[in-house]
Image 1: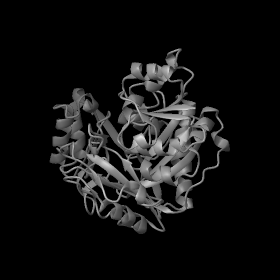
Image 2 (image 1 turned 120 degrees about the vertical axis):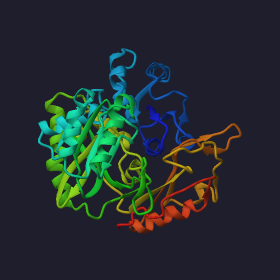
Image 3 (image 1 turned 90 degrees about the vertical axis):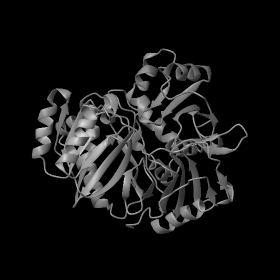
Length: 428
């Protein structure tokens, strides 16, 4: 079948790499893709939110399946746009409806959903410009630290953990009064700080049945030892030594099953991934957030460890046969280490030439280089085109070995200003 994948990051390169291996994939197109995705299929110069161009391309190229990588087009309603158009309504779309995508698109929506279905999460309240002073009083009385979240999509930057009341007030004012994140912070969710170990679990669902397809821990801070500014993710490891069968069963019973049951009870159209951002406090799991798509850089370890044909799983989801699927994982540890541009997550320059010594194909089967922010320039060379540039993923007998292999590979890659964290997976 002809498949169109939307997106341009490391997540999309990992998905393209996995989809291209499927016996069901005849032709793979990636819109807009990056320098790495050209190895998996054909890049198409269409933006992920250009729904009309996407529909036209799908019709003209007999696309039978569209896999949506990033959250923006999902929240903006690409599923609905495709299904409401007679020319594209029969295409299999991997991603939820716009209403289902509100699990990520609105923190307030997801919190209310969790309340309705008794899913454990932090206590919270929500505020807008209309009750700003009430919000300040709420902060004054709140225990510290306190978490403030822009309600809408803010490119992973809309969360502040404030250690003092003054810092919380300042962040609250920046978001609501000064519109730090535009419309995304016109409403702010203020919630209890949960202290524990963070992890992510990923499922594929048809809104009724589901299968867990992976789990991982990512590292958000720019600096060694989890210091400095938050980023989109500096690295990731899987599987997690602390995620025992008993704890995973608790996650399924208390969080995953009630979430999927909630989608069904509320007749929410949902055909795609659910990313459960969790925290382990003692022996209890709590939801920090939902995402309506795969994570980045988590996809770069989840897809390599998943032994199933991913397109076959998509087809099972579409046919309501997910319950019969048997998921298999590679038993080895997997780690990805992200190389970023100098200055990231602040200001950084693009267009830096990337040199690979040795070439990626000579690294061996244990290491895969996924491109994130790259492009092919006019001379045919690969150059930087974003903050997070490459995600180097390796298999190893344990997490430390996998991380070391990725670091060894990165020591043979160069671009001006390149930086990566040397301590990914340090707890393990």
